[in-house]
Image 1 (cartoon, one colour):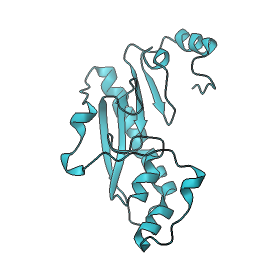
Image 2: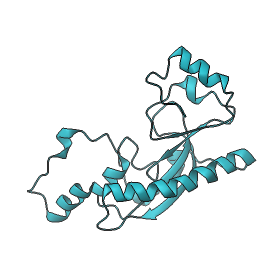
Image 3: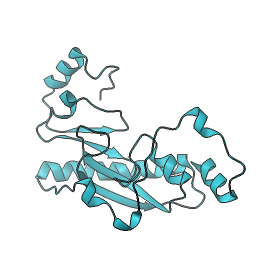
Image 4: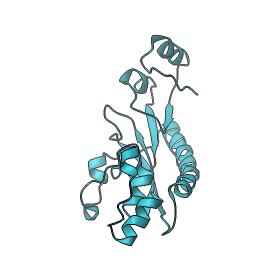
Length: 173
């Protein structure tokens, strides 16, 4: 496992190349340079804590709760040039409980995600994987794409003038 400060550091890239990886798995990380994600012959995939293409970005768990969603899930997808846009490998949907907090949902998704990572590795290893471009994965009934940008300190002020359910969901998220 590597967590380098600089993903373009020649020493890190040499270390990574020396492993001669067939496949790379990334979870909860930032944008990878092409030199990293394109290295393995079988590719690099990411586990994302939403049902992509919905809730692309750094804080999907939080935004799912803030928006009062009743379901979410995890997605594995091949990394490409843009953030959270690569071809989908698998998705697993779960129910979001009405009083579930971000921490509780995170822990539930962590377990579901671990299983999906194993399923994804096994499918790629066997050559039995069918990918789906994200634009084809979108449910036409889900409306416009919902993004999940990073939540900053200034985003955390509660607007007490909002309706009670909106305040409640904001606090959960």
